[in-house]
Amino acid sequence: MTVLKLHTNMRLLNPSLGEDERDELDRFRKWILAIGDGTVPAEKKGEEHEASWVTIPNDLLIHTDGCKISTLVSEVYPDFLANYKNPIFVLTCYCMPKQPNS
Image 1 (cartoon, helix red, strand yellow):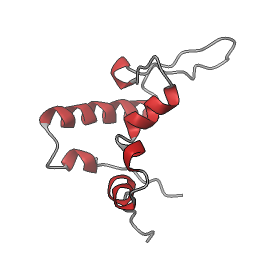
Image 2 (cartoon, helix red, strand yellow):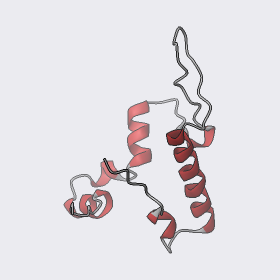
Image 3 (cartoon, helix red, strand yellow):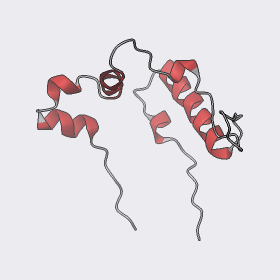
Image 4 (cartoon, one colour):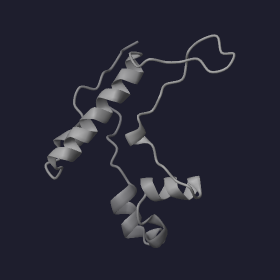
């Protein structure tokens, strides 16, 4: 078995990112890595035998008093409802190129 590790976050190298956006992405990257490494404290819920729940930082949560599903869709895919029938919009905004397997 071969273990592969990612070392560079390509999104952080995007020259169009402002300093605040870059810092926010870097904080998120570190938090996600800490979860994967098991260094974020976990807690037990109810009768669980093993701690498996982590607290998501408040600034990463999507708050709503309305429909949770439509709020999530709007947050992840802004302008999607107005443009989902436009194939150019969908292709340019939501398709990520994939490197072929080598």
